[in-house]
Length: 298
Length: 277
Image 1: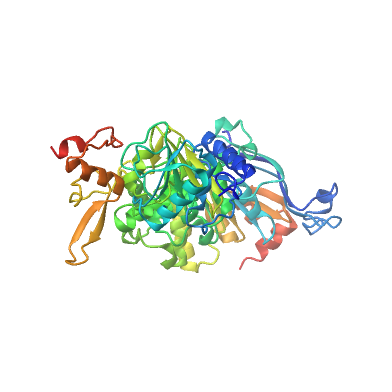
Image 2: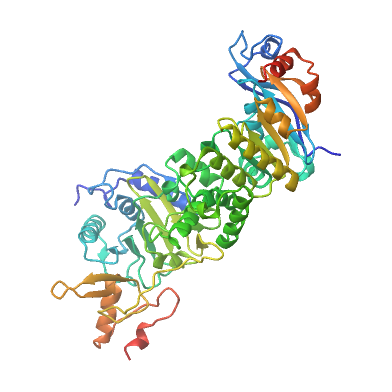
């Protein structure tokens, strides 16, 4: 690996990325354009998140990469391996151990700390794109805080379907100014962005944008006074760990065809299963500050 | 009585302009394109006042600058120069043309309503008609779906749109119905000022009559001040108390509508009256 510079990117590129990231942190929710580089993976496969990760990483870091909750997906494995080879860092699957977490479409179930950074891979950073195709126009709308079109979109959803039908990419207001796309995380994860202890960075490689939600920032999902924002509800517990407080995914048994649900965050689910089997495992608190793991299996 | 709206020295030009633009254009030259630099003087030297509850007509042929004038009032176009004071905004102290875009949008959403000749310009045809009214309310920071729908129902009732069509898209409506949805959208925030740009052009006569009736009724009931732009003296006669006649971007005559109809002074106004069928 001596042929490559540390962390794959050249130093000037890293410097640009850090500068843009600092700007993004200074203006919460504002999309900062950056010169997205050619990466050894295809655009749309997480190049934005990867570039942000590589620009902030150092040899003392511990890195976790997960993809829709899973540490074992092809995308997550490849990215983790690339980062570890290029940066000489320790990989982990445990959200508590990681100092940097790169993610696709999920926020870990365990609450992140002040010393941790969560880096999102963002496919489409422009939250207003669904209502306005022109980039010039969306920039004007952001600058003037003219978000009535998005509100109208929500209103029409309610009129047509009786509820707001945005299941992921739910528009959030950051720090009372910029409307922001939290990347395609489920609604379940949206409240975690509000007044968090950790820094959230968002990188969109194909669309060449970086934005951020700093720690202790107000993040509110768009909602009407009489129709509040709601997160997903599940009617059965996780089939593997019995959890009722996590985001669950549906799957079908290959043999019997029976429907079952299981935690989407596989590392958290795995820790709970090991704890239930009597192993001593450290499990962090969830985002509301409680630790349901400690009493459910007593 | 103090005027609710005051415009002074408004002009709008398209092009670089030169010192002789104003001298070489206007009704006495029969043109609004400057012969020395090619700049189009869409309107110039416009002064007008509108009093509370009054309906002011602006009449003129195509290209006389009347639409440009109302578009600048609704901030759709930026004027080249001029002052615009609204009594209901900061007691009429601020020149509205000098506000920031955000402030202009606030004024537009809270204090004005506009009905365009073409419903495409004023409506989102692929959103429900209730949604179109909701848009105007959402712009004015309404955030309660129940209240928004109540208000939309009220307005659609006032403009005689059947309530069962509230959640249908205006693109499936007839021209007259689209125009009535546009009027209810313009009225959504109870604006003190309503601008109507050729609202009945392109509608057939019976529908035209109903739309005009509706506007008269709204004016009577709500006492809104209106500026009505038309090239049709019949519309002007029916709706307005006072009229201004425009030609080649200038006001050539103004006065009481009756007076202008009975005793037109300017040769152009005389031609207009004589050409009425």
